Length: 203
Image 1 (tube, rainbow, N blue to C red):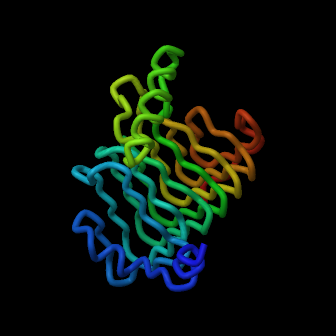
Image 2 (cartoon, rainbow, N blue to C red; image 1 turned 45 degrees about the horizontal axis):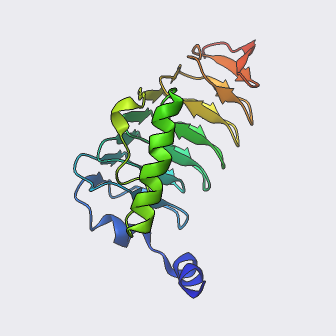
């Protein structure tokens, strides 16, 4: 409990980033205190690249040795949002992502219940042996597809963006939406599943 309180008070994301050569920032990148990086694998192929003048308070999560996250220039991602990657998440320039959003570029588990049973058995074994509980997970049975967020997109709070989705330039995602399919540029979508509720003029 004391460690959690101290981490919350004194955690410095810049100090953490210096330990990892595959996290690339610019001199003008701003990492808020809420910004965290989590690597559950051995960090062999994971990459993070963040552009200039971007302010980030989100969580970067890599659950395996694969996965890349790119964030463009002049982008803001608020605290409590999570970018979870084992494929590729690409976020463009001038993007605004509110708090509590989740971008998840894989399905986490197989559709086959037998594979999910194996997941649970491996989790239990890993945990009992003192390892990360997904260390032995079989990722070969999990579907992964890149997420692309194009320039000038705004994603409202508590929204979920699922694997394989491209959100077109200038689109707006309403709060608490679940986006399962591509979003056309310059549209407003909302709901679960998200549907077009308005079309915007391309200025």
